[in-house]
Image (cartoon, rainbow, N blue to C red):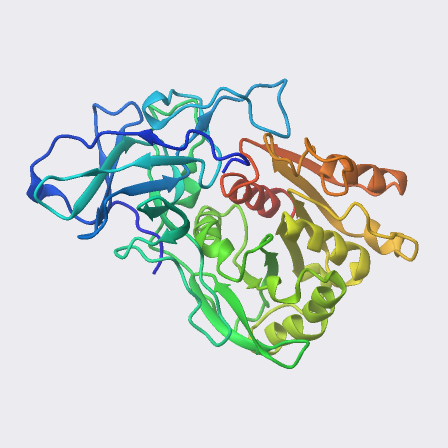
Length: 415
């Protein structure tokens, strides 16, 4: 099921904080998530969560409900000053997909558990926890986690929803309207292709609104990789990348394109296998079944975290296949570049991007930095490879990556 609309950071901060449900008549509570415009709310909106369970002794809500200011002297990890939804102020931004755990309150005489809070604009992640079990994530049955539903397919691990932007009350905060659902929406379909091991493997494919398989001008394609532990649903469920492109296409800031999301977790992050699978199986499948430009000028690849390491391997192993590569929130700094075709790499338009509080920007822990973009960029510098550098308000999370792919599409692709 797709995201409803109105109806961590690394250390999971503020676990156990408690919020009271707004006073309301019992019959007004509806299971699920309700987003309501509210003049009394500091953000302009109040969000109410209702979970139904007759047997639970405790229900908690965990989600992306922690907020920060931009502290210029802090990069690569979050500052100590973190704020709850009730402490939110204009200019703050969300960081951490499961950063806050909230005790819900049971409505007396019912099986309903309730929590309400003001939230600014954004695309939010959440799960429910029962009776102190912090490992088992319970989905919202009224808003299930997105699943591909195909053979060997997977599902996302959180439910999601969207809160609109209030231009007056949120004037100094991020306008997330570029992730809002619109009428002229493209289509996301999940399907199987035959992978490098000869097995059915899942793909998620977005075709833009009005996609024409007979169009004289073939469509360009952006191949997108999730991060560690993710799968083919992540970019669509966690990142609402289809909504991001719907809005850009409708606004004319990028041309209609096809998006292809794969499941790289299945190959245990063996980058040689992943790149061969992309080259020998995924690209041929897409070019056989869709009206796409079979040329590097019409192909882009981007990925986040472990997917950023994948992007590095795509750039260095098969630079001749892609005209554009986006490396987000992590890179394969330890890649042996002895046999890299640097002339082909220089022909590629490259973006490096991360959140300001993202360890993929600057590694702030561990003895050796083999991952961050700050450690990776000197490799490109040494070989005089041009690239763009982008930092956005966010952490190593789904607050950061939709912003980066929007920048990638609008400022790098097909330019």
